Image 1 (cartoon, rainbow, N blue to C red):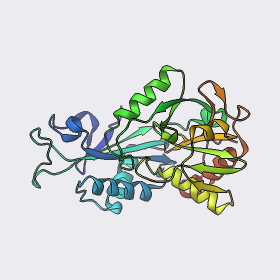
Image 2: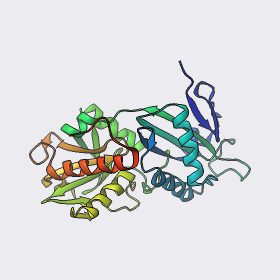
Image 3: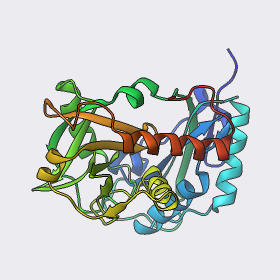
Length: 291
């Protein structure tokens, strides 16, 4: 078996040799930030946007990430080549480092811990073609969802509720207002127009979400960034989720009731096709396509 390389504090080492201190603040407090970047044909998709968001998240929690976007990009590129990754993801995170347990931040002498690895992951083509089911879950997370932090307990509890109900995703809502999925952004389509929650502190401003918004503006697809309600969700013609991992995936059933016709709708399909073109422009021709 060939060696799998990971990054530990800027150095490439064998994954089996990678160790993190038991008092690392990411492990004990969830005190850190992370990113996941899709890789197609051995190339990262929207790498700059992801890495810029990583640095922004670090600033929001006063975590000093000493790397530039270009430095991180080069390290990740090298790891992709070393691991011969063609289709999958790159995961990376920065924590506030290791120090004796104390809720307050450690001193400046404690350096952040940086880890990264690759994983082969196929495109979820069947889900994207046929659509998935979703469950409604009250959004009980903290009020800084705009930070891509390691604190994901609320998200995974919501995802588990969905899984236990035979659903792919949990659509979260604060009272009557729909926010986002447990691991995705949510959008609805009504009368040909796309609606999605604005990029406030209540959602993560997804990179795929941003790309969809660009595609809509470029291709004359009506889009409005505005909060929508559970009733709007119920009456939508189409609903879709978006993220780095699922790209654009139709939601065809919510709480056991069909969305629109119960099949992926025309606007969602058009966005999927346009999104594939964006991938191919950056990363080359895809071997597995939706249509």
